[in-house]
Image 1: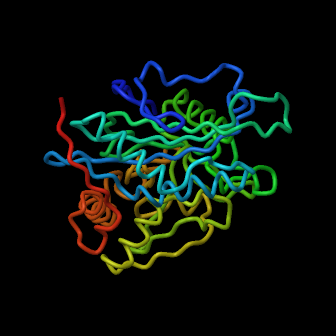
Image 2: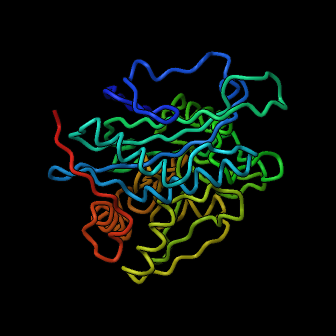
Length: 310
């Protein structure tokens, strides 16, 4: 899926807030040519004069973990990037839900595969609505497979890795589907092109384990905690066969952009009753309350900022 956005007034680049049109880097930066970058996606929700950023620090922490995996040193601290994000959101005075994209990438310097150029860091925040249809989506198993962990650092959110997801998503769209589902190298369900995946069997949630080659999703972690701690549901992390997905009672994606998106069809097989299931509905309702800071137990996940749109 692609989402049309309106450009904001400001971005953050290498230590300062700049006008949107001045947030530029050179065409010869290493990250552009070799995919040597790491990034995050963070949601902020507009609610009665406030922007509520969900799990901001957790996302920045994962950005630093990804950078460490690919031998990249981000020239700022975690606290500095958290503060920079807050200041950028305040400066733009948003009046709608937003999506925040911190990105760190190797910049201008030497050329070649061994170059360890200085690292540029940018933060972008744009007004952003729904990424996938909340009423449920039709998916297909992609012909592109998730590679094993010893071929590319799949536990890092690396820019170059997303060519694979781009191809999978394009393939699904060209074949008339809303989204792709990828298998791992052994043929088990891995994830979507930008989402983690859950199935529901007899009111039990099942999701592929992180150690089995999927991204350690922050929304995924949120759902696991909400389902077990608030709804009293069993959550099992294990491999999922394609046939289990086809015959699941319910299925849904999780992700910062996708939030909680019901899957109602896969490869022409109707999932459950072909509509949002009971468990999925409960999780969506609880998640929506959580990201707005309406549940006291999880309010520490929400960074609340006053926002006065121009």
